[in-house]
Length: 146
Image 1: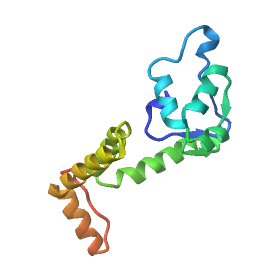
Image 2 (image 1 turned 60 degrees about the vertical axis):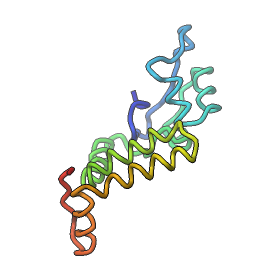
Image 3 (image 1 turned 90 degrees about the vertical axis):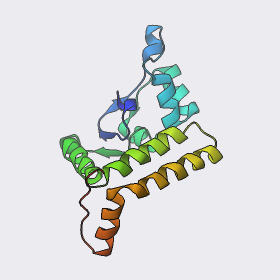
């Protein structure tokens, strides 16, 4: 389930594994593809082929999770991160995700072309005008997603 998320925060005692080979099957629902893209082929294969779990600290060092916090602080940290993101321009957030996810499978030249197209499309939005005005006026922006 964690592999379906853009960002992941783990409790310090969390463990992560893909143990399906121990059952005679392979990870499904994108497990073989998503894990490889997040942690690299070698680490993904080691996790899958051994079925062993890794600690939250190892998950952090391999890029499987973005942050590790005490279990008691997990929800507060997730809400804090969500709040940071929610204060930004929704169209820019969506467009950034499109650029990263869409460009992931492209060569650099095609990825840069995608980025240029998406970047320039934002200049037609009210959010860009609001963000620029807010910056110049030294105030918090009030984005509307338009």
